[in-house]
Structures are given as C-alpha cells and as structure tokens.
Image 1 (tube, one colour):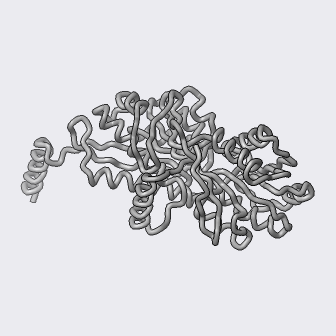
Image 2: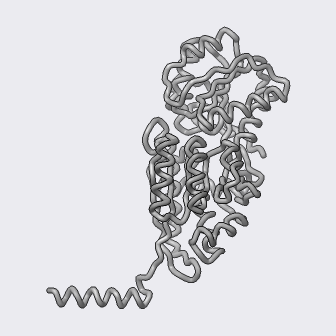
Image 3: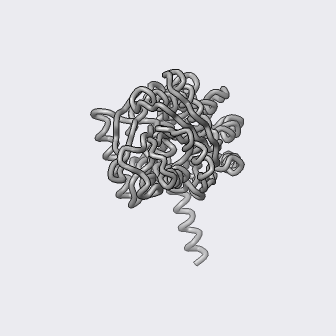
Length: 378
C-alpha cells in the first residue's frame, strides 16, 4: 500500500510538472452584508460575484499564457464599519489579488485605506458617497454614479417633474444616507424648491412615529429618505398610518425588488420614486435581461439591485489582469485604470479619480408591487 501511494504521488507530481494540472490560483475577495437587516442585498452582491467567477472558470481564462483558476473569498461586514475594516484586513492577510466591495459607503470608505496601504485594487459596485474616490487612493474604483449625480438628479426631479411644493427630508445618518440626502437638498434649493424639514433616524430604527408626526404638521407633498429599503418599508407603513399621503423618494438604497414586500399595502401605485445608480438603454437591455435570466437559473431568485454591477466589476478586474499579463496587483493596476470594458451594465471606463465615466441613473416607480422603469438619465 505504501509503495502504491508513493507511485501515485510521484505520478501526480510528474503530471503537475508537465503542466497537465498546473493552474495558478487567483483570489478575488468580496465583502458585503450577508447578515443583518440588508442581508438580502449583500447576498445579491455576493451571488453576482460568484456567477462571474464560475463563468470565468468555465471559459478557461489564461493570464500571461498560464491557465488560472479564480477563487472567491467572501467576507461578511454586516454593514458595520468596524466589521468592514476587520473583513478588509482578513482579505489582505489572505493575499487576495483584488477586492470587489464593499456594498455600503460606510464600510467601503474606511476599508479603502486598508486596501490602498496593501496595494490591492478595490472596485465598489454600489458605494455612492463621493468621499470614497476623493481620498486620493490609486487603488479605489467604482462602477456606479456617485451621490452628487444620484441625489442631484432626484432633487431636481422632485421640483421640476413631481412639482413638489413642500419637500421634507429624512436620513439615517450613515455615510450613504446622509450623503445622498445632502446632495438631494442642494439640488432642491438650486431648482427653487421649498424644503420644510429635515429629520434623522438610524439604519437600525423601526419606530418613526415621532419624526413623521413632526413632518406631518408641515404638510409635505414629497418625503425624501436617505437610507436603505429595510428602513424605508416600515417607514412607508407608518406614513400611511399617520395619513401622510406624500410622494416618497429615495436613492438606490430603497430602489429594490424587496421594497414592495417590506412596505406591504402601504405603498400606492406611483407613490414611490427612486433612482438606481446605473442603467442600460437600447441594445444593451438584452445583455442585462440575459444576465438576469442566468442569475435566476443559478440561484433561484431574482436580482435585487447591485448583482449586475458586482458581476461586471469582477470581469473588469479580470480583463485588466489579462491585458496586463499578470494577476499581481502592482502590475495590473495600470491596466485597470485604462479599462474600456463592455459589460452587462454598459461600457465601463474610469476617470482619474477612479469614478465611472458618463455614469447612468435609472429612475423607477412601483406599480402593482413591481418596479417599473421611468427613464434612464445621464
């Protein structure tokens, strides 16, 4: 038996040295909240990364002439900044070749310093706070438009299209919620709109009666919420209970497939208007629909919101490695900066800060419990 084992081991070594089984392993890190109130969004992101990795491995990608196997190293940050930095350090210690994430601005921004110090490229598929790419880190990229465009577009829309006369704002004090709310307010003021109040909550709150009662006295016809769908759903329920019949607006954090379920019968058709950072038009729509079909077949549920951007982020990173002929972060970083990749979310190219060029936004409402596209704007 011992001799048999030695022979088979020797045979295996011979095969490996001959290149039959030789594959370099390329580790792609992913971080998102797969626990906590927005775990459904974190799972959506992680699944987008997983699908990209599986399809790349099926294609038999070569980098620098060598066959490679991609491995997904997934971590949970629970949408908590402290856990986010711990997850980032764990990925650095695991010697990942690149990182896709994090989902939230509040976790992405502090983690970005850790990746920068380690020289590891990071692409966020969903963090929209402008500060993320304003710190001067050469390793930081994002594939969606930022809050300046997101909040700005929604603020102008609230005044010029929705014709809001009395506009109230609520934010959850996170980096994302506060950032998008501030940009919304700036755009409302610039468009000549009337802001009647700004209240605050948290991303873990469930009772909004006090702040909603305060706003009800000011008779708003538009309420903007800077935060995520897990808070927006119960907030809509409590608005209905108090008889606040205002339009409800928000950024991509609320603009999910799950919002209607979280709000229940409190959400009237056309009441909610939201914008998602990203969007496809014309011939690009088929690519997105094909992706969504593959995603549902693989995981058994519909895309929530960010999965296509995660999928593209993985592919953009790997495309840079292939063009550079190396998965070494210091060697493919320059190629990543020069990306011009046609993905399911559109063409991805980065400006000097690492932001996506010509980023699109998609405006949505909800009818019959389903998200309905209004328009793609740039």
